[in-house]
Length: 282
Length: 350
Image (cartoon, rainbow over all chains, first blue to last red; front, side, top):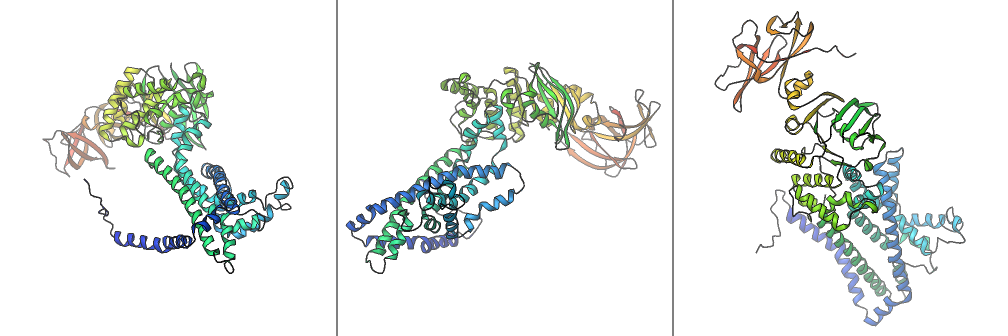
């Protein structure tokens, strides 16, 4: 039987150091804080834990957090692919500027974005007034969704763009000579090729949205009943002074959130690994 | 069904890629478009396919004007140099793609598409690979799959763009012979682009030699090789050397030497004397022989290659001699020309 070989011979030295550094770094920055989170959670007795994570506010926040994040990431997939397509396939004046604008949500402090979005979409803001009073955007789940769309957009564009740039035009031409119309070519040839990149973009945008706090509190407001999990966590933390279990409750919510996120991201990664194995990485 | 290209012109921006090209391809013929890069051969192929539209002129499939049809409507089989397979589809799905995307009314049943794919795989000698993905195939196998995919739609013409360009020499030779057999078996009108003269001459019924967006000559391998229409064709097909000469009253002179060559049918004036390496013999300097000096001697296969620098302007002439002769580098020699072609020098383009 072939023995498991940990270390492949390589002409490039430094495996020990690089691997050691990676593990140590991951432990300090990622694993230890997360372990602390779970330890704090375990200090709660089961009944209290259950009360916290089955309460109506928690469930509403859980639904809004993951629901709005998934919908926002999904929306970003559609818009992001279209934007990436325009940036890659067309040459027009201002293309570089548009390309740079895509990154703004990366760079802008999200609280600033939240304040701006909150105002623009408020009933007398520039865009909000077009919809009010029939559709209220700020201080509703729609507002939360818009904030999450805003912060997630660059992830999809930036993951799909390079793959689209590498896409062989001849593959499209081959489809055309075989009689495939434009739409058929997009559906059967281009989109399946982009799928791994789209999944990555979706996963990143989704993960980013689940963890978002800054912009959402401004567009959702406080005391409006529109609450996402991070906001709920902060609310618990605010009671730390006079509530003995506040810190533990916050940790419990965070731990549940972490596990759900991890399960979803793991599922996306598995789909990706499957598609890579099947189609080969190019 | 014949394919006619009539006065086709194609410009990319202001740069003309094809200059008023006309060509008729007979039904069932295997034609090679041969030329160096930038000669317009690929552009011509893509125009026939409908992947490019001509700036002027028409492409006729039989009697109908194909230039008004889109690439989807033309029903051509196109094979790309780098295969352009759909890498997320199995081999069978790749081959069946052209049938799968037909409008419902003309689309065969799923099982029928599959059996057609299996049948075509058999034709390209890849039976049993129908459920592999392109990434799991070698280059030669991928190109055969690409060919099967192109044949699946029962194309009116098969167009191949440097089909063996990305393959190594041995696979290329094998596939070449195999493509010829396949063509003889299926009888598809076939046009392929190549920059490899050996490939063109060995494979094609007729060779179209192209240069700078124009057709230089159309002919069989023999015609192209034995009676090239221009110095370009002469030098592009096979090895050759050229010497500038002057024709006066049917006599040919290289610099001050009168060569023992008659040129009764060539008008007086400057001309180009083209020779092949094996049509020149090496001897002592003398009357009627091109004077020169040996600059390089090297063994080459069964013979010996000698490079001679001739005349005042040091024109290089490559000749091939039997291996038992071995002239020393630097010695003065005379070249006797056994077979040659004379081309009057074209007036310099305005």
